[in-house]
Image (cartoon, rainbow, N blue to C red; front, side, top):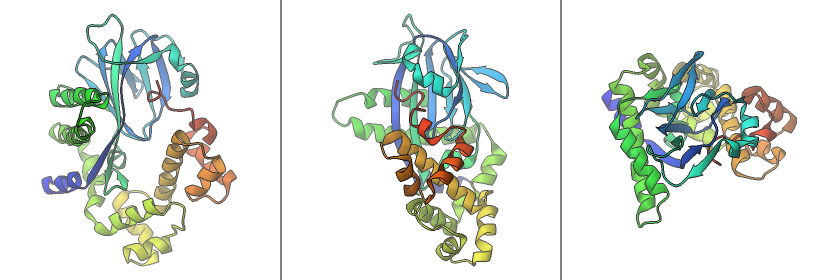
Length: 309
């Protein structure tokens, strides 16, 4: 297994999306936080918590909350939060609750926390932590991860020479230490054993790469079979045997994930975005989008919870 994980780590491409320090102006619970990137949150002073199966789990000093991409989660910021909002309500009134600050401080007279959002992809096509299907969890008693996060936050806001290079190097270091933490503490053993299997099959990797590069094109099983050089009748069974899902469900998820990014980062119309991710029928795209995320595509433009504070 060590060789397998080394192979995965060597194939990882890691990218920092955002890193910020946040002051909690007023305590709040946000009941449906959703991000398409991985998020790490560390409480510098005060309370950060999340809901796990109906139980409130509070970060202690030095704890880090890791939320893998694509996980819907209820989070609370600040002590004794009495206000509960959904994401849309929170985003509309974000400045009442949180604001960016230059530096984190455990000695400040206000509650504050820091967060890092990042991507980690296998062969630049498969979302690594998302593919493992692991739940949010707390990284506890890990001074290395804390130290790397602090360095990233500092260098990301620095204008000194070499800052961008240090951000890239430390992001690689951070992801490796997260993987080591999971393995050292034997977290999610069965999920890891099951869901990491398909990283060993180059034919499947070729399919995943092809899907990523051609989301706006025909991705029928016939096309996928030609990429993997297996029969059309077998490709669906082959894909599901290795990944646990059928290829068309995977393709729709990838299309919707790209649509979310386009909605958040650009100004294209819903029709243009639907076409760019492979939906010829805009109405059908909107129905599938709402079914998957629970809100209309137009509202997703405003759904960024922390990054625009």
